[in-house]
Image (tube, rainbow, N blue to C red; front, side, top):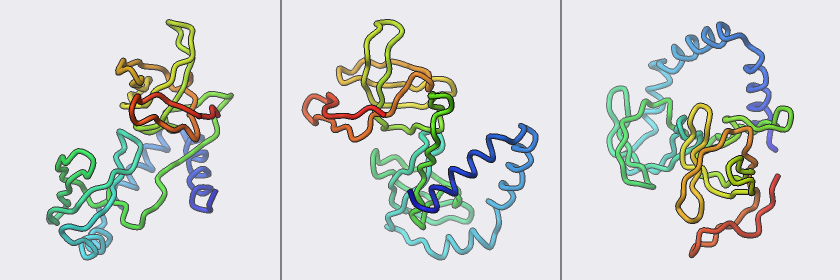
Length: 184
């Protein structure tokens, strides 16, 4: 684990101890910094149409690769490399320095939280419905549940506390079945 990841973990731990009011106040201060014209100008000067960049998508808790299409006054138009959709993004969403966006924290009392997962992660859990171990890939992060797709195309939802990341798992490209995985 590098120094940046350790700093991120320390920040998350510190933020978790703040009251809701303290978090709100911090959010207001950060919002003002995100709109700093000098910082925006520096980013705009470093961008060129056709440039490959990544941006952080908060709803998926992951970075996404994109191509710059147009640089506007207060936003940048990009094309998502995965699905081709165009997005008009604020400059602060761009990860031009390739900063690691993963914030991994240890499970609290043996249970994971939403912050531990991102769209595309492979997970396992024991289903309360079938009482069997299930494996799948997260396709959406909701406030209380993750939406997960199984290899047969069925979708399930499970609370984050039930989920366990599958590490070093390989997906069979033909069947989509997880093989040779290790559960954390």
